[in-house]
Length: 170
Ligand SMILES: [Cu+2]
Image (cartoon, rainbow, N blue to C red; front, side, top):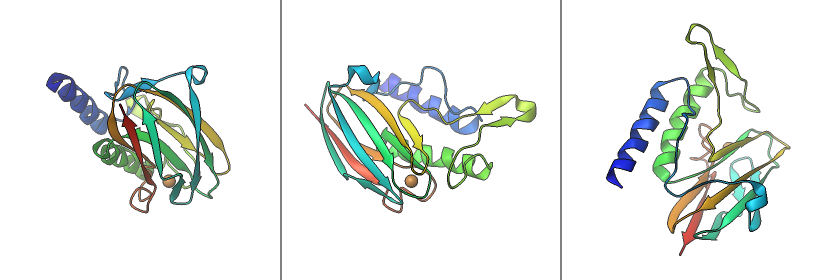
């Protein structure tokens, strides 16, 4: 357990210092992505400008849930599954994306980092970005009881209230 946590932390620190956010083999101790066909139920989450509806979601350990994310706001928003510490780290990455010009108020631009030859991408499996007026999906299998948050980590949004409680019970 300790070793796994250390490895995950190291991977995230590497991600912070590198233009390539999505490292191969990034795993999550609370579950993994799944195909929509495997889902036992769907939960619709409406994104507004600085809000999620509903604000709390309850799940049973072992469930595979298909989240349907409807952005009714005027801005780009994110739906990201994790704990508070993961969201704090992801907010730093999103800030770098914003500062590089890749993240605009309404969308994401794929950017090539010239000499580095790296494509900066936002494609963490526990996260999806939803443009204004669009709908996106994320399906996840939750494998253990834990307290998580679903959050938008676009700079300033989490602090403005774009975070909800996701409780996985036994
Ligand atoms: Cu947002």
